[in-house]
Image (cartoon, rainbow, N blue to C red; front, side):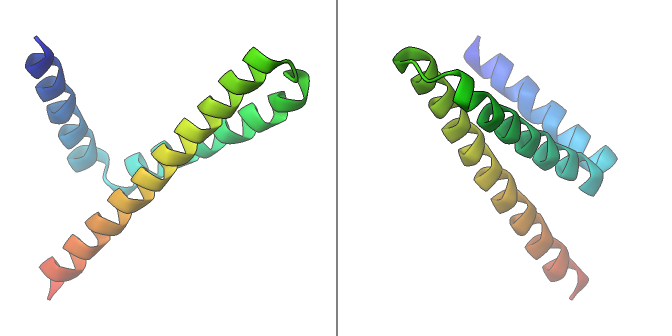
Length: 85
């Protein structure tokens, strides 16, 4: 069952990437940055232990996703450069 879901997700991501290209990847990055900013704005309201930890972990997750997205963009740019040569 897990393989079915992950394969479907991979196929959808490949289709979105081929169909929309750079705008798709830019939109993902922008969405992640918006989430980070939103969680940072909410941080002062969540100064108790559990809520603060939850928000901090969410911010960390979005930062990791943003780093991953930047790496994907870099890899795709390198592939385009090699293809153009």
